[in-house]
Image 1: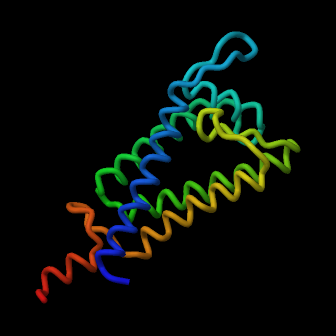
Image 2: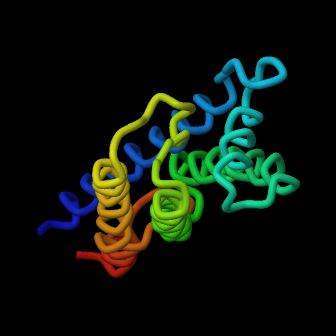
Length: 167
């Protein structure tokens, strides 16, 4: 595979992942749902879900929910602007693995899975959610395996080395 093809495919994967993380964060920030005691808005909806699932202590649900949104926005920005994209892809992979593990724990603990990954806009069985996350993990790994990106120009390091060494 040529360096240009690798670069294009890597950038394609980075762009998709950046949009996925941005969409997930914005969805959580703009969501509102009727819950017992009123209306939950923004990451508070995720906090309610986390508290009800019983895996995370209720007292930690709000900070975790806000942390998830902050993490998603940070990863989206790193991927979109190519700053430390290799690290961002690795963090994204870890995030998807952790989210999938969390869904498995919730499924076995409660008997059901309710995904709030995209602000309640995603749903389905554990198998479907796992498959979706596997696709995202694959995109992230492909971006990493196609070459480390240099943060300044979003070019794979192999291309930057080729250009530096000449023809």
